Length: 92
Image (cartoon, rainbow, N blue to C red):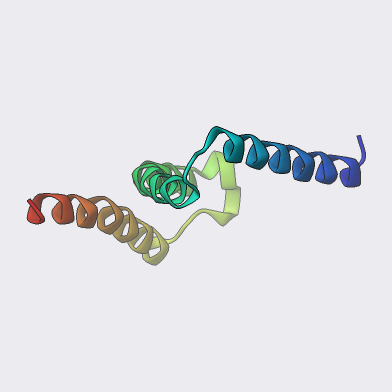
């Protein structure tokens, strides 16, 4: 399959899914809200996986992450995991 055909198939599939969700009566704002929550839950483990892979020399050879990069990515993982938890516990 050429790239153009694959691109148009993704567009067509997205349009059909959108039409289906419209006919089912799904609230699009609520769907965006829940997708943002799911993205927030998925982000910290994915950042940690990136951190682990970025330190593996057998994967990246001479392009492994340095100390500053590792520190910043670790900080991002920590902040993205801790701040939402603090928000949930502080708001109740």
